[in-house]
Image (cartoon, rainbow, N blue to C red; front, top):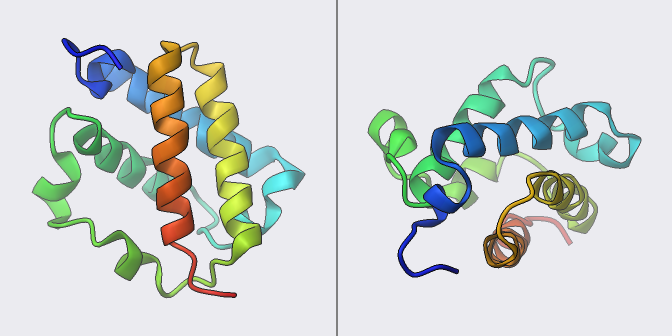
Length: 128
């Protein structure tokens, strides 16, 4: 990744992060390939969209919106009520990888996102 720019800046700031999140949830909401992960979410994805946007904003080096509103993300704890196995992890990654690809980001930013999201998604698994 470029040393002079944060990941947040490389993604296009607020506009770019929000677009990534919207592409991700649009795919989840419309793709049969994501039916199991979609089923773990509320009927409306509005709240999920906003929380992921807020989280990714701070996580990528932008404003720490999620922490300001909710405190420490505690990702694994917050996902424990949901049965997340390999299938759900893979479906989440399927959506995110396509959302990243559609973003036309700098290749180093895209590769960084894919690697980190793969680690995070695998960490969220709580089922064999």
